[in-house]
Image (cartoon, rainbow, N blue to C red):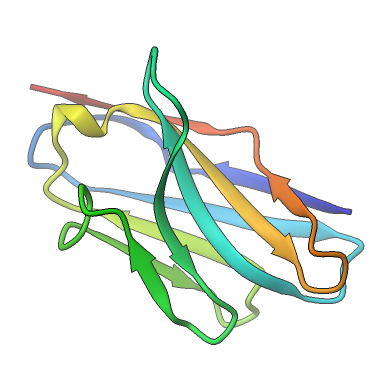
Length: 117
């Protein structure tokens, strides 16, 4: 079982930056892909960015060029650097990780990001 804890959310003005962090712990051998999803009020959860265990990345068109996903050296952490933030980036951001052995998806509790105009 994998526990994921996010941190780094907060309130920022449009054009500002935030860096989200997610640390994984628990009983697992290795994590496969990790990702950041987000869910704005009244909307469905959507993918923001993913990164595989080999470091390949993928971004939603809405964040491409502004957000950067990266994994820590121990591969149990994932970061999301968010620059040039817009009010439409306001959402709860969730960290997700796939267990390499079981294939199970694991989710964090979410961290609120609010961008004021």
